[in-house]
Image (spheres, rainbow over the protein chains, first blue to last red):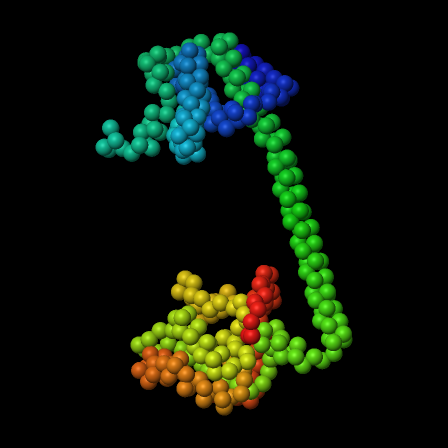
Length: 110
Length: 255
């Protein structure tokens, strides 16, 4: 119950408060979201496999977001920001699809 | 590890964080501590991230579109303005021409000067020369320049190369393997219209160094060179932007 409430509270808070992202952080927001999505889909799969553990989830979420943002930041400083973010998005995208496929197999046994 | 499977397959195979397997290696009956505040907080953070990004993208789009639209309308208005000005300039130019002709009448001297300055179209007798590279030779911009100068020397009043009248600012130049006259690309065969007294033109040209050189080259099959007299040749005026002299210094002298 609490996770669903948290999700709802987050969406409502975001819509009501409408915090503006500092322009310096704006390039990292999309990458951070993709990384966070990877952690969330992974958590869903772990949930289905009865392996979920909230600490692992927290750590993977935070480290995913931070590392993804850090890589893009580093890439920007080195002048290869777009290439590095493409690489990050590709890897995370593959993971998201693989995890989603595992969830699908578990639910539909197919 | 990359020997039997590719990098992408490896990424797909280890899609789930290893930590889940480390913490809970054996299969369990139920997930561990899913319904906790910690999970809720993380999911709330995720939801905020998504909501903020969505709002940001949504609110920024109209601004970008507005800027684009105003730029497009700017371009459109400038284009109409330019067209207006150009048509006005054309009208004024025509007015100037008619005023000039009404003020000074048919001035023979002015007409002659305009003919020599390539300022007006011309029609009359002269030579029509067609030349193109032969099997063993080539025609460069330098050759064309020398040929045209040969005709000037022979007494031509007007010369045009492939329809481009030669004025005082005309350049015959090679650029990227293409010969350009009045900055218009042209190529063989080169049709050179030379206006003037046909008989004396031909005679003087054939006796000049340039003429002898070209006839020699024709004999050696370096070029084809075909010169015919005609009573009715015409050439257009030189383009306006090859005519306007913006800076000039008066020279004292006989010439």
